[in-house]
Amino acid sequence: MDDKELATFVRFATGFFLDGTRLWRRRRDGAHQLFAKPESRIAILKAVHDDLGHRGFYATRAALTDRFWWPQVRADVVWYVRTCHYCQIQQATKVLVPPTVAMPAPLFSKVYMDTMHMPASGGYHYIVQGRCSLTHWPEWRPLRTETGHTLGEFIRQELLCRWGALREIVSDNGTPFLAALKYLAETYGIRHIRISGYNSRANGLVERAHLDARQAMFKAANGDESKWSR
Image 1 (cartoon, rainbow, N blue to C red):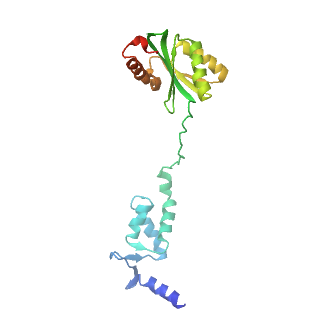
Image 2: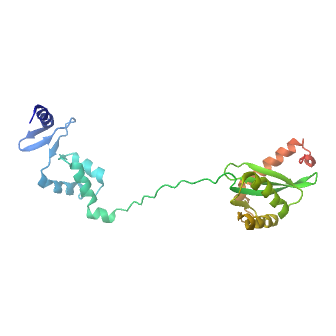
């Protein structure tokens, strides 16, 4: 043993002391730990784990190392707790489910649509709105009539030609929407989601904007409802 190895051994040995025939491991707080002989370690593990309610690794290790110590005590506690028969029977298995990240739809891949009846103005009686589900960006157009053709032209010109292909359109069960979107579904493969009757909240993203748009147009027309289309 060279001087370096001797110094290491002496430094390690000073962490222990003998009290009669018992070897103790020193602790700064004065709560010294008794060195457990190999033949007594299983009995100690059984007493600390089995007799104290089959607690888990941390509680078992804390109770054991409060009084005893031996080399590799942590590994022995891990082994004993994991191989305990009663713990394996009673403990619920934790199923680790990998986290899922919701992927938002791209711009204008899903659109909420609705029409709003307006006072007659320059031959216009309706406003149709299509609102992006991701950005809430609206596209509007005044309509003279609310038919499958006029709605279909709005979707083709203002949505398809401007924003690209759509995946889904959400609307109510109005006859013009059903006619327009049936044609679009057959031609472009756009899925049509129809909300249930008398459930405007299902299309609330676009329904809520109606009041704001209506008030803004009437204010811009100085309160004259017949001039909102100008």
